[in-house]
Length: 176
Image 1 (cartoon, rainbow, N blue to C red):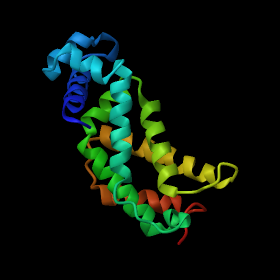
Image 2 (image 1 turned 180 degrees about the vertical axis):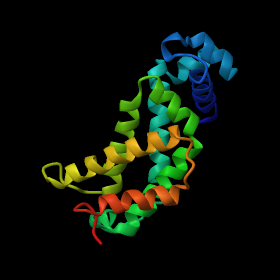
Image 3 (image 1 turned 30 degrees about the vertical axis):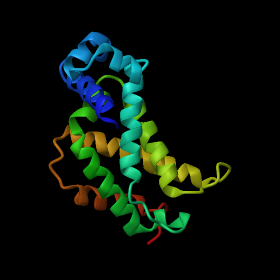
């Protein structure tokens, strides 16, 4: 995100930790972000658009450094563990923001972000293929584990949670 957009997003997320999304005004956001009202409207049309931009930024960060040569490699056990570990580590940095979103009724946006991430991560799984449901199965599980792990204080390291989940997925989902 560009500097001003980032400040606006940080302002909204800081406010989400103090009050409900429905109670936050544009005035609150520009005051918290210390930007001009015109800067807000130059970058965003709504509060929801700020969240969408933040989720796009998260997805882009999750996809950075993905370098598998073929689509089947996502289902390789070690690649799945490494990808899940990376996702958990990235989300741990954004723990407060993700939990604030979830607690304010934006769990579906988090889920959509992970759906888009895993579909892009997997590559060319055909929209007509039954394999696409494997992706949504993994995405739903990842999102639920992520939220509960963050909510419980993320006591276990990302590597441990990733390994545990890959063990569960290995039954019919991942390649040994």
